[in-house]
Image 1 (cartoon, rainbow, N blue to C red):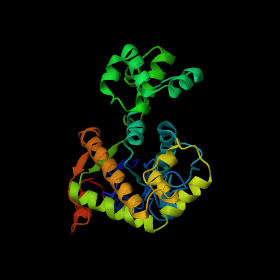
Image 2: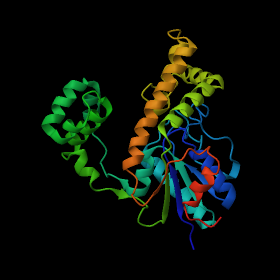
Image 3: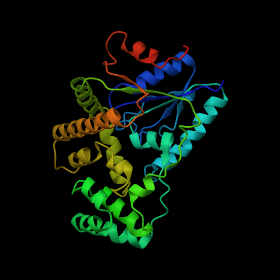
Image 4: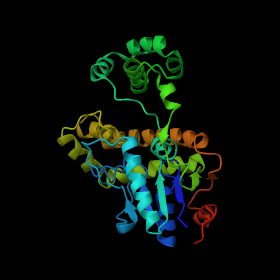
Length: 304
């Protein structure tokens, strides 16, 4: 019988990676990364990538930051790794906090055709207020749903409707390519107490800043990469860049990075509270409580 796919998801700093490593060690499984920052080899410290897991790790630090990886591109790679693990009789354990990656893999992606380059350039060059006014005419539902300052999502919705003649919402109702219907999935979503989570976010970012993150950002800046690239928008890059440029003291950069991490964790917490399938198990204990990790893994119902 083919092993199921285990998904361990939740907000940043919730202990997902350590839990996945424990499970993989117990059953001889394969840990497959589902964190959008941890795919880039440029920022192992700043992305909190786990240490070298040798033959157990897949899709960690394999991509150059100059080459962005889309959710669809990652999902295709993840499918290959999942199938290879199952063919070898090993348990594939998907772990990460990038909800878009996980949803694209499980549910598929909207088959939006390529956007006309001229339309994309025009939209991306316009002010967000101008794009929002245009979107209100062409896709009023999206304009009402998106925050006025959400530059990227407003631009995306507008370029799609202008280029294809259909709204992004219409395309998203036709998802294709997901594996949810062909693979047995056992999902575990970590929802620890927020105060505990935020304290871990603060401690981890401080440790990153002292443990190599500054050097990572310095190398990125020297590389002259486009600031719009995902690797340049990873949490901590802009904050540490301000320190390196002399605008902030390191204490200011750390405080700002901690705040950005907490805000990101809050958004993830909200997403994972509502988006995963209801049959996925939720676990709300702090994982450093005595016996908590074992109790969490038992909820997956696996033979170990």
